[in-house]
Image 1 (tube, rainbow, N blue to C red):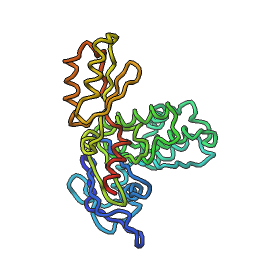
Image 2 (image 1 turned 120 degrees about the vertical axis):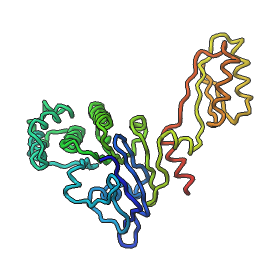
Image 3 (image 1 turned 180 degrees about the vertical axis):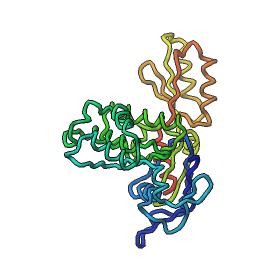
Image 4 (image 1 turned 90 degrees about the vertical axis):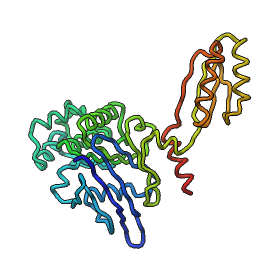
Length: 305
């Protein structure tokens, strides 16, 4: 599977339009995240792909051809729901073995997945004795068991401890390396933003924006923070600080100990950084901090109001 396209998909529940003319493409080798407020349509979009909801309009296109969401298509999908549930009396190994038989997966894959998700030592314990994080890792193991070409994750970071997050990051890296797709609905943008390729922002059933984090930052036009670490030479520092504080590039500057914190519009960033050459003796170091995806998300939603 090289591409999966939702083309002009609409879903109605009675008089409520849960999705409105949604077009979205997911490409092989990329991790796409779905974000939006509650009721934006994220879960409905996922259910359309899983075949749990039939759209009132629109089509699903795979590799350029229209595709029904039948059992043959579902064999290419792996799904981790937000809340996982397994038979409490079953062991972790029994759970994975059951799904392996159902999906026609070889037995050796069960041990491989147990090791991958860090549950080998707990594989013979009943699920009732698993913590929330362990259950989430078991659910992730079920989702990746058949090495699906499209892995769909619904709020996968919920309940995960550091070990669980490491497992999740490893899954994302492996799927990217293998040229497979990941579609992830999440609210934890700060956690995942360095590990995603594109973001789809939904609101009230419509697509607000789809692009890379870098392009969405440009679109949001949020200030960039520049942190100047000041040198000990106070004679050189004072003129530099005064110059930045009086600079007309639309920035805001504030001293914080031996650091000068400057919030500058993206268009003025290069001009601000050029001051380093004029005041090299006053500057011990520079860091540029891009606005997080949380802030980008909020700004793009604000503009829609």
